Length: 296
Image 1 (tube, rainbow, N blue to C red):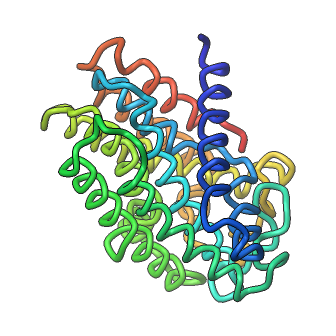
Image 2: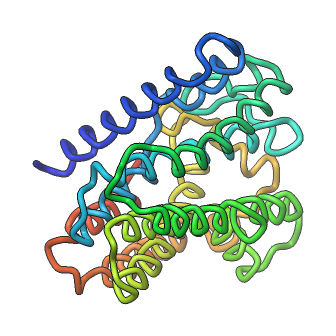
């Protein structure tokens, strides 16, 4: 299967799993809340985090289908962060994935609740999903990894720094901290989760950490570039909005061309980290290359 077909197949598996899970929760008791959750969760997207979880599991000799629920859990938590980031009190965005943001359709209150529900359901999924091959201690290790990446030392802390850095004179060290916490740490956790599910040893988990951190930084820098050099139709967001809000980005700090060079270096470092895994890590290598080549 070539890489494009691999991505299409993996996305379809993620989409089916997420829809089936959400359809099975709480019946018709909370229709407005479930509609708001589904609106953002099932609106497409790259599904990069669950795909990385499955690819890492495969690279470590595991079965990707066993890792699927854990990867889908990271997608739910990621979607929570997008809904909340788009809120007027945060980034105040009007569009996400070529459609109005959640709060523009459902109002701020239900957007907040939808995000809250996706966050908590993601951790529920990791603890209760089918998969007898994944023992409780492994589930706990995955949950600890993802909790750490989502909390004060991860996405939440990164978002706080991001907000405080708007229209401020931000140096590269601070910008890297924002990108590492807000984006790269959670991508790292998604990769490590796949390794944990596969029963990978410490050396392989270490390689996955290095891969995830570098791939995550490349991913965010590429996002920064697309925010100034992309097209709204392709990115699904309002191109130029970061600059109008005075966001701390790599293009604003070092320029677009230097940003491209930095993203390519991080992607190469990610590929190098998993080189000892040989052909087993083929999909991880392809994903790292895709991250810096994508147009959305």
